[in-house]
Image 1 (spheres, rainbow, N blue to C red):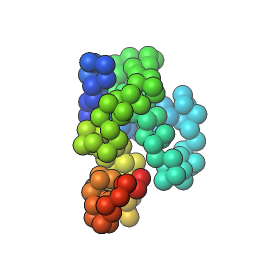
Image 2: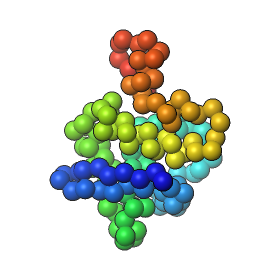
Image 3: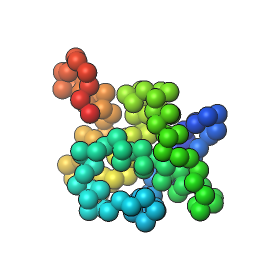
Amino acid sequence: MYSTEITIKGNTIPLKFSFKTMEILETEMGFIMPEFQRNIQRKQLSYFVASVVAAAKTASKNASVDVIKIEDVYDWVDEHGFLSKTVQDVYKIFIGQLSDGLEGLELESNQTLIEKNVKAGKKQTPQL
């Protein structure tokens, strides 16, 4: 199960990354799944933020209500920093759900971007 919680504006927001999350991204947010899968490498940040919003909606008992807004997720990321453990843990769950059952995506699903960049020997600004 790909679930966790985040705190936004003092409220605990459950997140559930699942097939339902993908359906919300497609039907309510206008993402087209074949394009989503192709573009995830090029637009990771915007796809991640939208997926957090959809995961909050998936976990909600009232799926017809938007639990959080995209701006809330940007504020949450800004508060913690994209490369913080807090944000990277959620990112890892997001990538894990997308890559579950696929060969060759283990690096992204089993390492944070920080670990990936450290392993690559990068000492300058981390490459996303």
